Amino acid sequence: MLKNTFCHIQGLGLRSERRLWSRGVLSWDAFLDGADEPHARPNMPASKAQVLESIKRLEAGEPSFFARSLPAGECWRLFAEFRSSTAYLDIETNGYAGPSGYITAITLYDGVKVYNYVKGRNLNDFKRDIRRYKVVVTYNGRCFDVPFIERDFRIRMPHAHIDLRYILKDLGFTGGLKGCEKQLGIDRKELNGVDGYFAVLLWQDFKRNRNEKSLATLLAYNVQDVVNLEPLMVAAYNMKLKATPFRSSHALSPSACPELPFKADTDTINRILHENQRFYPQLSPRP
Image 1 (cartoon, rainbow, N blue to C red):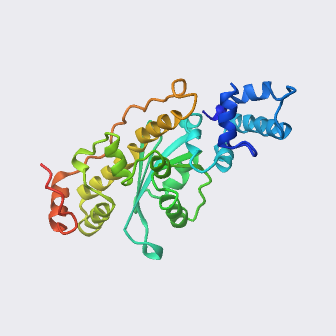
Image 2: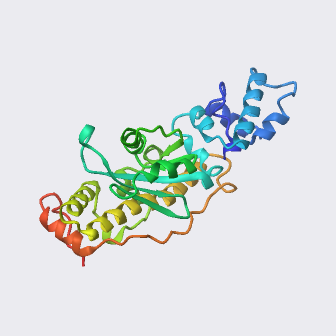
């Protein structure tokens, strides 16, 4: 889709892009082929230079160049070309903001393998591993996950960022990550109803009682948050394509679901539900 995109070029917004498509100018190559015609549009020399620069940046594998130039809500167009260097990302915290807050766990998923990082064990490995990727996909990560990571690790994440919260909202999907998943037919099974606050309770139980089953359940929840981003990203990409001439030619398929490295412990979930029933009156014990 990126090679068919013109809205990142100064002077060629979304309306100009649609006009180009309607005239049969469907790619950068087609644009360059017509750039020297007598009926070329105003500012064509500048636009031609920017198309040439776009080709150069894509060949160099620089998604951040396009992320900086694309209109708000159009970063989904990066996905297909940079799918192999994309990491899906989500963090869990101790529930506090400011100086008292810290990251308890992080999961990365690159479409093939799941990587987990836990405070007190291997959390610092995340700083090394995230450098392998050029694009990150999150849900609400622009406001929460990435700023928290940058503060906690004292690093900067220069990655191109696709935040599904805004793309899915634009497509009419609301209710947070779990709500979007339900609307798109994703079932969390034994983790249905478990949320971010429950993840905090799991971490507290692990720290207080050294209960490895609580940690495993927390990581199972974190992994689910991340692995589910991939089918959501593909669905959002394909739905966005419907407003373009490329809905059939550019449609993507989700990757096969990876083997999940952790399994939620239903006894632990039920115990914590019982201990905190006032917060989860709508949830029933797991069978």
